[in-house]
Image (cartoon, rainbow, N blue to C red; front, side):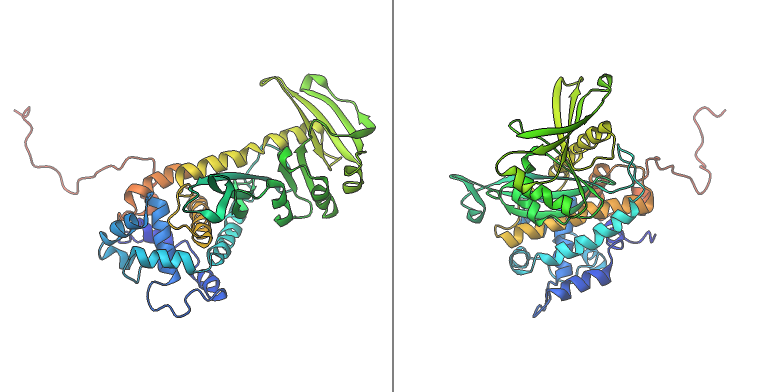
Length: 389
């Protein structure tokens, strides 16, 4: 790695320029743009994510203070907050969503052998949403209560590496269960969801697509038991049944058998009832799969702590989606860098180091090394010791 390059430049070298240009061309992102290209916009927003900038003025002030370092980092235009604001407002957010998909595919190939809590050959996904509260007067398009606005991030993560594979940004008024209509379903994979997504017409779509789901049953579920399997109650299992729904609507919406598993968690003194369309895996494995769903909650907590998605630099829906997708790009880029360079640090530590040394001219491996630097003298010291007699 060239020691004359800043850490920011070395990071940007991991991004496929050709693929980025293809995404820009697909949506005419640079059409009639003389200055401040989509790449300049992307670099500004990546800098803001890596260094926790609070506002457009903050971004402008900090970048302008870097002087000649900006050109070598890839910037080709003068940074102005009004120009960046217009770019976020008007340039199609799908440019950065498509580029994130390119990075996600690369990260998933690097994490294909990552272990998960359950030993399965199939891909396991966790699906959930998180809400980001907003000001109603600034974001009227996102109103979901009388005096409140919010956006929801409906996110599907691959548990091998905790990589977000699908993100849909909506207003807070959108019900979680309706996001299942937008979810791409991959045959043979497992989808783990909370009971808020229990809609049997939508769950039947997974069965028709030859995919598997694991979710929790609601208390008022109307069903008839067809058969049962014996369980070891010492393991926490209480029942393993094959059931048929017999409610007036659910029987039509999900006309085939389901598997109902009851599990008692001794450590938290709580009883869980799971529903799945998989009849082959052991009942304990199904319970362990649902426990993996907590990874998506940890993902939401992580990105809210380390990335700028709780406060936005623009108020339009295009600006919000642009910022969210560039934040996803940054997160996935950190996974790629960590894997390809075999860095022995978690992603949070990597981002913290970058936040204070982004324009330092340090080799990237040295910047993230846990070993303290040892200063070696090129020549012996000629100074006499006071104890030399």
